[in-house]
Length: 341
Ligand SMILES: Nc1nc2c(ncn2[C@@H]2O[C@H](COP(=O)(O)OP(=O)(O)OP(=O)(O)O)[C@@H](O)[C@H]2O)c(=O)[nH]1
Ligand SMILES: [Mg+2]
Image 1 (cartoon, rainbow, N blue to C red):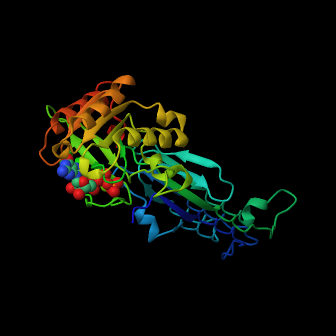
Image 2: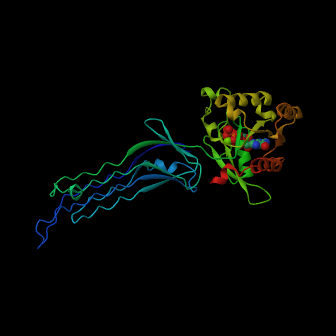
Image 3: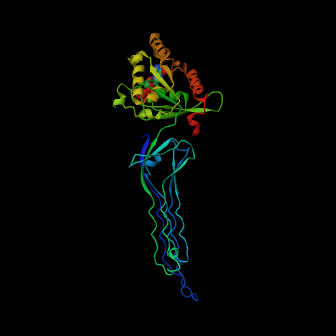
C-alpha cells in the first residue's frame, strides 16, 4: 500500500543524573565535593533525504528514540552526552504535532533538518553546589527527561505534472509510455488505488521531470464517491495538470460531460487547483471512429484557452508531441519542483 500519512513517536534521551561524591585520597584530608554533572540526552532530528520517496519505512518502525546522557561520576567526571538520532524523511514531508495539530515543519529541500524532540539537560553534580559557606554540599540533581512527542507525517509527492481524469481514461497507460513507471493497467475503473510517480526525461538533454498518476475521479468524488478526492493533494504542488478525456466510443461516456465533472471536482478541492495550468488531452483516439467526439473536446479546450492534444497510448500517436510540450512547460521557467530532490 502506498503510505502517505503516518503517526510516529519520538523520544529524546533523558539527561544523565548529577553525581554525589567527595574526593577521598590518601594525604588529602577533607577532599571537597567531586560529583560530576550528568550528560545531556540526545535529540531526535528529522532530516530530508532524497533517497526516500515514501513514508513506508515508518510503518515498520514507528518509534524513534535517542540515547540518554550518562550519569555524572566522581572526580568531577561529566557524563557523556547521549547520541542524537537522525531520522530520514522524504523531501515533501510535512510534520505535525499529532496532539495539537500544529504544523512543525515542511521539508522542501534535501538536507533540511529539524529537531523534533530535545534531549534532557543533565543534572548538576554536587560539586556545582559548593560555595564559601557551603563546603560539603550533598545536593545533586537528576537529569531532565528528554522531550517526547507524537507526530503526524504527511507526504505530498513532489511531482511537476499531475495526470487527472476519469477512471479508465488511460492515465496509467500514458505514464507507462513516457516513463519507466510500471503501474497496473486494466480495463476496469479504479485500477490505480495509489499514486504512481514516473520520471520522464526530456528528449534533448539530461533534464527530467516527474509525473504523478493518481486514481481516477468521478462525479461526487468530493463527497467521497469512488476513491474520493484525497489523492488530489498529491498534485496540489504540480506546475501542470494533464487532463485526460477518453474519447473512444467503447467508453460509452460523454467526453464533454466528463470534462466538466472533473473541473467541478477540482474546484471543490481548492481554488488553486482549479486555477492551475492545464493541458487537455483526448485519449484513445485509435478507437474513436467518430471524429466529432475528439472535436468536442478540442472546442472545450479552445473555449478556455487551454492547449489541446490528442493521443493514443496504444499506437503511440501524439505521445511525443505531448511529452515535449509537458517538458517545455515544466522546464522553461524555474527549475522543476522535482529538481529539489
Ligand atoms: N485502445 C486504447 N486503449 C487504451 C489507451 N490507453 C489506455 N487504454 C486502455 O484503457 C484501459 C484503462 O487504462 P488505464 O491506463 O488503466 O486507465 P487509468 O486512467 O489509469 O484508470 P484508473 O487507474 O482506473 O483511474 C486499459 O485497458 C488500457 O489498455 C489507448 O490509447 N487506446
Ligand atoms: Mg490507473
